Amino acid sequence: MRNPFPKIGKVIKYDLKHSSKKLIPLYGVLLALGLLTGLCISPARTQQFFDGEIVNENVLSSRDFITVSLGVAYYVVACISAVMTIIAIARRFKQSMLEEEAYMNLSLPVTMGEHLWGKFITSFIWMFICWIITFVSGLLCFIRLGLPDLFRELGENLPEMMAELARFNLTFGKIFGMMMLMAFAGTCFIITLIFVVNSFGLVIKSRRGFWKFLIIVGLMYINGWIFRLVPSFDSRHMPEIAVGNAMMTSCGIFALILILISAVYFAITQYMFTKQLNLD
Image 1 (cartoon, one colour):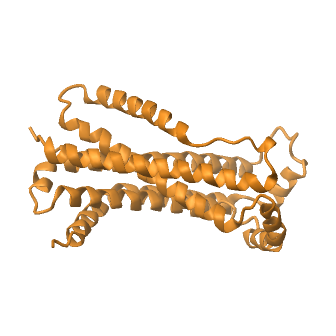
Image 2 (cartoon, one colour):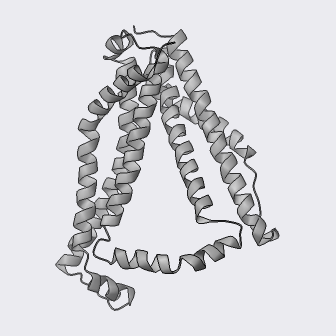
Image 3 (cartoon, helix red, strand yellow):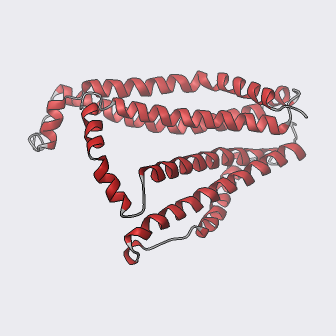
Protein backbone atom coordinates (compact mmCIF):
# COMPACT_ATOMS: atom_id res chain seq x y z
CA MET A 1 0.00 0.00 0.00
CA ARG A 2 1.36 3.38 -1.02
CA ASN A 3 2.36 5.71 1.81
CA PRO A 4 1.04 9.17 0.81
CA PHE A 5 2.61 11.17 3.63
CA PRO A 6 6.12 11.67 2.15
CA LYS A 7 4.63 13.05 -1.09
CA ILE A 8 2.15 15.24 0.79
CA GLY A 9 5.02 16.47 2.96
CA LYS A 10 7.00 17.53 -0.10
CA VAL A 11 4.01 19.44 -1.50
CA ILE A 12 3.60 21.19 1.86
CA LYS A 13 7.30 22.03 2.09
CA TYR A 14 7.44 23.48 -1.43
CA ASP A 15 4.24 25.53 -1.06
CA LEU A 16 5.24 26.87 2.37
CA LYS A 17 8.59 27.97 0.99
CA HIS A 18 6.96 29.68 -1.99
CA SER A 19 4.23 31.51 -0.02
CA SER A 20 6.50 32.53 2.86
CA LYS A 21 8.27 35.05 0.63
CA LYS A 22 5.11 37.17 0.57
CA LEU A 23 3.36 36.39 3.83
CA ILE A 24 6.19 36.32 6.39
CA PRO A 25 7.22 39.98 5.73
CA LEU A 26 3.56 41.02 6.01
CA TYR A 27 3.18 39.23 9.35
CA GLY A 28 6.43 40.82 10.50
CA VAL A 29 5.05 44.28 9.72
CA LEU A 30 1.87 43.45 11.66
CA LEU A 31 3.85 42.37 14.73
CA ALA A 32 6.08 45.45 14.49
CA LEU A 33 3.07 47.77 14.27
CA GLY A 34 1.44 46.06 17.24
CA LEU A 35 4.62 46.49 19.29
CA LEU A 36 5.11 50.13 18.26
CA THR A 37 1.49 50.91 19.06
CA GLY A 38 1.83 49.30 22.47
CA LEU A 39 5.06 51.17 23.23
CA CYS A 40 3.56 54.52 22.22
CA ILE A 41 0.44 54.18 24.34
CA SER A 42 0.71 56.18 27.56
CA PRO A 43 -0.99 54.43 30.51
CA ALA A 44 -1.58 57.80 32.23
CA ARG A 45 -3.06 59.33 29.10
CA THR A 46 -5.27 56.31 28.57
CA GLN A 47 -6.54 56.53 32.15
CA GLN A 48 -7.33 60.23 31.62
CA PHE A 49 -9.35 59.32 28.54
CA PHE A 50 -11.41 56.70 30.37
CA ASP A 51 -11.91 59.13 33.26
CA GLY A 52 -13.31 61.68 30.81
CA GLU A 53 -10.62 64.25 31.49
CA ILE A 54 -9.53 64.69 27.86
CA VAL A 55 -12.78 63.99 26.04
CA ASN A 56 -13.41 67.69 25.42
CA GLU A 57 -9.88 68.56 24.35
CA ASN A 58 -9.76 69.93 20.81
CA VAL A 59 -6.06 69.42 20.26
CA LEU A 60 -4.20 66.15 20.49
CA SER A 61 -0.59 66.09 21.56
CA SER A 62 2.00 64.89 19.09
CA ARG A 63 2.26 61.62 21.01
CA ASP A 64 -1.52 61.17 20.87
CA PHE A 65 -1.44 61.75 17.13
CA ILE A 66 1.34 59.21 16.63
CA THR A 67 -0.43 56.65 18.81
CA VAL A 68 -3.74 57.07 16.97
CA SER A 69 -1.97 56.88 13.60
CA LEU A 70 -0.16 53.70 14.59
CA GLY A 71 -3.41 52.21 15.90
CA VAL A 72 -5.19 52.94 12.62
CA ALA A 73 -2.23 51.59 10.65
CA TYR A 74 -2.26 48.42 12.77
CA TYR A 75 -5.97 47.89 12.15
CA VAL A 76 -5.54 48.40 8.40
CA VAL A 77 -2.55 46.04 8.19
CA ALA A 78 -4.39 43.42 10.30
CA CYS A 79 -7.29 43.47 7.81
CA ILE A 80 -4.86 43.41 4.88
CA SER A 81 -3.01 40.44 6.40
CA ALA A 82 -6.20 38.38 6.62
CA VAL A 83 -7.23 39.29 3.07
CA MET A 84 -3.74 38.77 1.65
CA THR A 85 -3.50 35.35 3.30
CA ILE A 86 -6.66 34.25 1.51
CA ILE A 87 -5.48 35.83 -1.76
CA ALA A 88 -2.07 34.14 -1.42
CA ILE A 89 -3.75 30.76 -0.91
CA ALA A 90 -5.96 31.28 -3.96
CA ARG A 91 -3.09 32.59 -6.08
CA ARG A 92 -0.77 29.75 -5.10
CA PHE A 93 -3.42 27.16 -5.92
CA LYS A 94 -4.07 28.75 -9.29
CA GLN A 95 -0.38 29.05 -10.17
CA SER A 96 0.53 25.50 -9.24
CA MET A 97 -2.57 23.74 -10.57
CA LEU A 98 -3.77 25.80 -13.53
CA GLU A 99 -1.01 28.08 -14.78
CA GLU A 100 2.69 28.02 -15.57
CA GLU A 101 3.71 25.59 -12.81
CA ALA A 102 0.92 23.11 -13.50
CA TYR A 103 2.76 21.17 -16.21
CA MET A 104 5.73 20.53 -13.94
CA ASN A 105 3.75 19.86 -10.74
CA LEU A 106 1.19 17.53 -12.28
CA SER A 107 3.85 15.54 -14.13
CA LEU A 108 5.51 14.54 -10.85
CA PRO A 109 4.89 11.06 -9.38
CA VAL A 110 2.30 12.50 -7.00
CA THR A 111 -1.38 11.59 -7.12
CA MET A 112 -4.04 14.26 -7.44
CA GLY A 113 -5.27 13.50 -3.95
CA GLU A 114 -1.76 14.01 -2.56
CA HIS A 115 -1.47 17.33 -4.40
CA LEU A 116 -4.79 18.56 -3.04
CA TRP A 117 -4.22 17.35 0.52
CA GLY A 118 -0.80 18.96 0.55
CA LYS A 119 -2.25 22.26 -0.60
CA PHE A 120 -5.14 22.01 1.84
CA ILE A 121 -2.81 21.43 4.80
CA THR A 122 -0.50 24.23 3.66
CA SER A 123 -3.45 26.61 3.37
CA PHE A 124 -4.67 25.58 6.82
CA ILE A 125 -1.22 26.24 8.27
CA TRP A 126 -1.14 29.75 6.79
CA MET A 127 -4.64 30.54 8.04
CA PHE A 128 -3.68 29.30 11.52
CA ILE A 129 -0.48 31.37 11.49
CA CYS A 130 -2.48 34.43 10.43
CA TRP A 131 -4.90 34.05 13.37
CA ILE A 132 -2.04 33.52 15.84
CA ILE A 133 -0.04 36.50 14.56
CA THR A 134 -3.13 38.72 14.68
CA PHE A 135 -3.87 37.62 18.27
CA VAL A 136 -0.27 38.11 19.45
CA SER A 137 0.08 41.49 17.72
CA GLY A 138 -3.21 42.57 19.28
CA LEU A 139 -1.84 41.74 22.73
CA LEU A 140 1.29 43.73 21.94
CA CYS A 141 -0.89 46.80 21.39
CA PHE A 142 -1.65 46.75 25.14
CA ILE A 143 1.80 45.83 26.36
CA ARG A 144 2.08 48.97 28.54
CA LEU A 145 -1.47 48.83 29.93
CA GLY A 146 -0.86 46.24 32.61
CA LEU A 147 -1.72 42.98 30.88
CA PRO A 148 -0.36 40.90 33.79
CA ASP A 149 -2.66 42.79 36.17
CA LEU A 150 -5.59 42.25 33.80
CA PHE A 151 -4.94 38.51 33.61
CA ARG A 152 -4.57 38.40 37.39
CA GLU A 153 -7.94 40.11 37.83
CA LEU A 154 -9.51 37.67 35.38
CA GLY A 155 -8.09 34.80 37.40
CA GLU A 156 -9.51 36.24 40.61
CA ASN A 157 -12.93 36.66 39.02
CA LEU A 158 -12.85 33.22 37.39
CA PRO A 159 -15.00 31.43 40.02
CA GLU A 160 -17.71 34.09 39.73
CA MET A 161 -17.64 33.90 35.93
CA MET A 162 -17.83 30.10 36.02
CA ALA A 163 -20.83 30.27 38.35
CA GLU A 164 -22.56 32.68 35.96
CA LEU A 165 -21.94 30.35 33.02
CA ALA A 166 -23.20 27.39 35.05
CA ARG A 167 -26.61 29.07 35.17
CA PHE A 168 -26.81 28.40 31.43
CA ASN A 169 -25.23 24.93 31.67
CA LEU A 170 -22.02 26.24 30.10
CA THR A 171 -18.35 26.02 31.02
CA PHE A 172 -15.22 27.68 29.69
CA GLY A 173 -14.18 24.30 28.31
CA LYS A 174 -17.39 23.96 26.31
CA ILE A 175 -17.16 27.50 24.97
CA PHE A 176 -13.47 27.19 24.06
CA GLY A 177 -14.04 23.81 22.41
CA MET A 178 -16.93 25.15 20.36
CA MET A 179 -14.89 28.20 19.33
CA MET A 180 -12.09 25.92 18.13
CA LEU A 181 -14.56 23.73 16.24
CA MET A 182 -16.15 26.77 14.60
CA ALA A 183 -12.72 28.16 13.66
CA PHE A 184 -11.68 24.79 12.21
CA ALA A 185 -14.92 24.41 10.23
CA GLY A 186 -14.81 28.00 8.95
CA THR A 187 -11.18 27.66 7.85
CA CYS A 188 -11.93 24.40 6.02
CA PHE A 189 -14.88 26.06 4.30
CA ILE A 190 -12.84 29.06 3.09
CA ILE A 191 -10.00 26.89 1.78
CA THR A 192 -12.19 24.38 -0.04
CA LEU A 193 -14.32 27.19 -1.48
CA ILE A 194 -11.14 28.61 -3.02
CA PHE A 195 -10.29 25.18 -4.40
CA VAL A 196 -13.67 24.40 -5.92
CA VAL A 197 -14.09 27.83 -7.53
CA ASN A 198 -10.64 27.61 -9.12
CA SER A 199 -11.29 24.03 -10.27
CA PHE A 200 -13.95 25.36 -12.64
CA GLY A 201 -11.10 27.09 -14.45
CA LEU A 202 -10.51 23.72 -16.10
CA VAL A 203 -13.71 24.02 -18.13
CA ILE A 204 -14.08 27.81 -18.37
CA LYS A 205 -12.03 29.13 -21.27
CA SER A 206 -12.92 32.83 -21.34
CA ARG A 207 -14.00 35.54 -18.90
CA ARG A 208 -12.95 33.33 -16.01
CA GLY A 209 -13.16 36.14 -13.47
CA PHE A 210 -16.78 36.88 -14.36
CA TRP A 211 -17.83 33.23 -14.25
CA LYS A 212 -15.97 32.58 -11.01
CA PHE A 213 -17.84 35.48 -9.44
CA LEU A 214 -21.15 33.97 -10.56
CA ILE A 215 -20.08 30.57 -9.20
CA ILE A 216 -19.29 32.10 -5.81
CA VAL A 217 -22.68 33.87 -5.75
CA GLY A 218 -24.43 30.63 -6.71
CA LEU A 219 -22.62 28.60 -4.08
CA MET A 220 -23.37 31.18 -1.39
CA TYR A 221 -27.04 31.11 -2.37
CA ILE A 222 -27.12 27.30 -2.09
CA ASN A 223 -25.25 27.44 1.21
CA GLY A 224 -27.77 29.94 2.51
CA TRP A 225 -30.54 27.41 1.98
CA ILE A 226 -28.49 24.65 3.60
CA PHE A 227 -27.76 26.83 6.63
CA ARG A 228 -31.48 26.97 7.29
CA LEU A 229 -31.07 23.49 8.72
CA VAL A 230 -29.40 25.08 11.75
CA PRO A 231 -32.02 25.13 14.52
CA SER A 232 -32.89 28.55 15.92
CA PHE A 233 -34.10 29.30 19.43
CA ASP A 234 -35.65 32.16 21.38
CA SER A 235 -33.92 32.50 24.74
CA ARG A 236 -36.73 34.72 26.03
CA HIS A 237 -39.08 31.74 26.22
CA MET A 238 -36.61 29.20 27.56
CA PRO A 239 -35.36 28.38 31.05
CA GLU A 240 -31.82 29.60 31.63
CA ILE A 241 -30.44 26.07 32.00
CA ALA A 242 -31.66 25.22 28.47
CA VAL A 243 -30.18 28.28 26.75
CA GLY A 244 -26.63 26.94 26.85
CA ASN A 245 -27.65 23.57 25.42
CA ALA A 246 -29.63 25.22 22.61
CA MET A 247 -26.74 27.53 21.75
CA MET A 248 -24.18 24.72 21.71
CA THR A 249 -26.48 22.55 19.60
CA SER A 250 -27.00 25.30 17.02
CA CYS A 251 -23.28 26.10 16.83
CA GLY A 252 -22.38 22.41 16.63
CA ILE A 253 -24.81 21.75 13.78
CA PHE A 254 -23.58 24.85 11.94
CA ALA A 255 -19.95 23.69 12.27
CA LEU A 256 -20.91 20.20 11.10
CA ILE A 257 -22.66 21.63 8.04
CA LEU A 258 -19.58 23.69 7.21
CA ILE A 259 -17.38 20.59 7.47
CA LEU A 260 -19.74 18.54 5.27
CA ILE A 261 -19.87 21.31 2.65
CA SER A 262 -16.08 21.50 2.76
CA ALA A 263 -15.86 17.74 2.15
CA VAL A 264 -18.20 18.07 -0.84
CA TYR A 265 -16.15 20.97 -2.24
CA PHE A 266 -12.93 18.97 -1.83
CA ALA A 267 -14.47 15.95 -3.56
CA ILE A 268 -15.70 18.10 -6.46
CA THR A 269 -12.25 19.66 -6.80
CA GLN A 270 -10.56 16.27 -6.89
CA TYR A 271 -13.07 14.98 -9.43
CA MET A 272 -12.62 18.03 -11.68
CA PHE A 273 -8.84 17.73 -11.70
CA THR A 274 -8.82 13.96 -12.02
CA LYS A 275 -11.44 13.58 -14.76
CA GLN A 276 -11.39 16.87 -16.63
CA LEU A 277 -7.77 17.96 -16.42
CA ASN A 278 -6.91 20.13 -19.41
CA LEU A 279 -3.70 22.14 -19.47
CA ASP A 280 -4.15 23.64 -22.92
